[in-house]
Length: 358
Image (cartoon, rainbow, N blue to C red; front, top):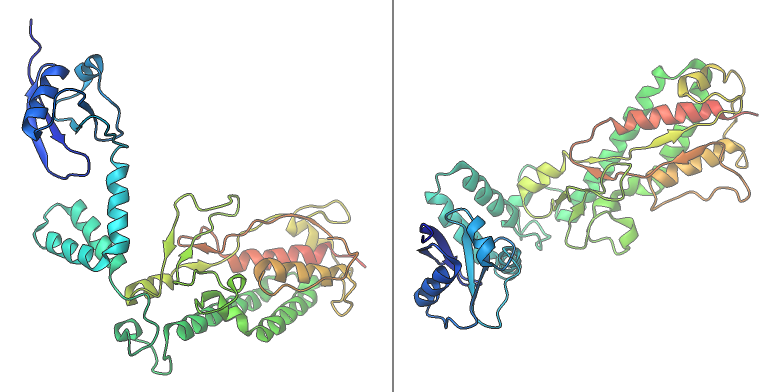
């Protein structure tokens, strides 16, 4: 008994045009497909559009109707739909303006919400002139900004400096929550941190794509920033990235990304206590003065600054050992932070000040 006919969608490699054909067997579908697409039957094969799996008669019987297939002539291969994605990405890089214009035309008549969102996101990400630097080259990017900013990099540098200043202000305001026995040491650490930041201009180069030294900026020369992921991973599994130099909307969105560091701290106090609150309760008067640059307290400050601002580390005194063990991978950019980085830093300073003894 002949198998019932089922419909399939056929296409050629690299072509968006599809043809419908119905057959009850692989051989019958291959014959119809070759006739439709004008290919020789001998040596031709059918494979799945999705992943390039070549069909056998047994596999063909398991396929649902309307499965999308690719018809290959002798010597051809198909890597799967990732090949279409690669071609699309190549077009994005080489013909950006044409792709944006095509997306705009499609969006005018599109009614499916999901496709509307995809097209709108594509247009947003590709629109703008990321290569432009001066105000007279991309005036729209500067809308809402003071007239004193003449180029994008100068504003981004200012933005970074302002952000780090605000972090220091929040850390300073935290002093009222510090145990009285630790406040003096806490304040001295913050004063040293503030002086060091002033000397390096608050690391404004982190956001400046024109900075010549790559280690002094967090972006590429084109202005792309990549999320470095949560503290306990080597990278960001979601591959977040953003280029605030592209357009005004991206610049505004970037201001909501947090320049932060997440830490996992293991304190080992001299008396065996391990929790921050226990440590500061037993600290008493046994706090190191930061004036002695050979003290563990000075080494602690050097370590903090190097972790927070690796581009401008302090050099601690040789031969000193860390007064605590650490496991502190960093997270520089995270669009949706799970915790307040300034409070984490405050708590860490308090805990470690309390572990230092004369």
